[in-house]
Image 1 (cartoon, rainbow, N blue to C red):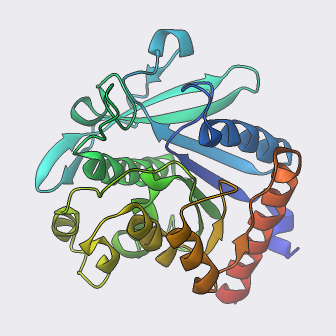
Image 2: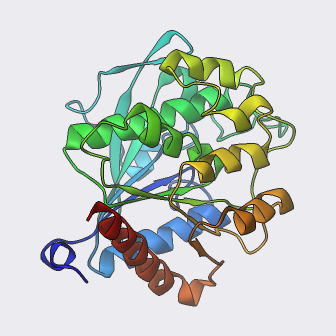
Length: 281
């Protein structure tokens, strides 16, 4: 352990498309619930973000708006969208969760698909808004994460934005990014115009080459491209993504069962953070 890490707690930013108890049980929601408690208890400093889907019961979970963090407009595909930040605590562990909200993207009473199982046509824009909203809020908090851990395909835009859009921002200059793909995904593709929309944020097509055909595997590939390491979220993920992980040569944490998960991830965060320190020197 280097002197810096000895003096300061490692700062881990968790970004997830689902977290229990705010959404029903799912692999990703339950994994996050366990990880954020375990990593917090291990002595690391954490911040936690998820989308404020319309099906989350604000009264039951006591969500409230954080006025000082809200009020910014984010431009997605050349259109202004107001950013609203809400916060709630996981009662048993008293850990705060920040929620990214917007009336157009997150008021509907379901998560990523309608009642018939059809995925929303604007999930690509919701993903962009979520990523930008998280990063802008972290900046407003004045908090510089050592490790950013993205869980699920909904977070896949975040590595791209950290590495390209915010590449000169001191909040993220030393951040290392870990991406975790899960078994849950989507059929077909996201909006075929996704690559075109990203040009509004001055991404060149070379950055988003995987999104020429935004299938689940290609969205994962782009997230991995701009991440420093990969950690399996599910024991079994789609074969194309798994093959890509095996071939990409990045540090990889294999799937861990519940009883091994916290310790394995805590060590992995330290390993990835040390990698960053070595590069910085």
